[in-house]
Image (cartoon, rainbow, N blue to C red; front, side):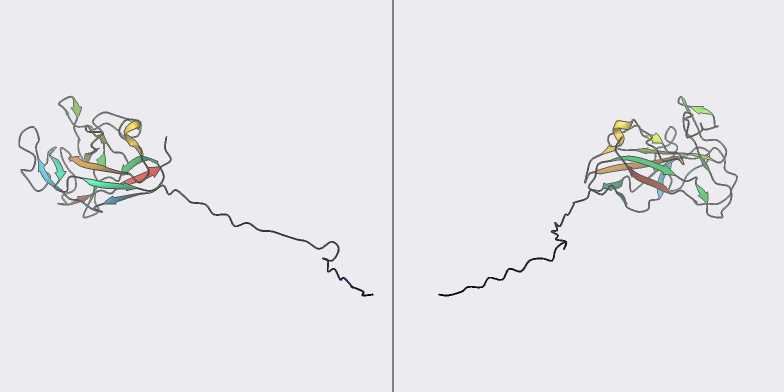
Length: 196
């Protein structure tokens, strides 16, 4: 006769047991970048009197300028977004009196320009400037304020994931300037906000 002894090892009474699962998630990033990072308004003139590009600097009163760069390209992240933009007043190189941003027609976030009406629009007055941004889908553009918003119809500001857009900045200068500086600078900021 053979005896077989069986030994069973069991967890002590009341001992905890566990199991684990590793979880991962992919993320969508809402972002925007601009290229080139800087431009110069260097194609200037009086559009209704002289062809644009007559001058390399802004003529005053109420000269108009585009940039030889023509387009600023915006690249968006992996999440859909709604584009908004803002700009600072044009600050002179000596830090003196800036040119306030104004609009051809008064808006809640942007005062109307105080200069004379020309071609059914208000022109910038003393120490004022209009900064107008257009894109291929918003060809007429819109005046930019210091508050982030979409200066076009909301549908024009919806951006797809991994998409690109092009922005064409255009400046209409003041009818007179208090500050004698020969260079004024603004910073245009683009925002990728949640889709509206």
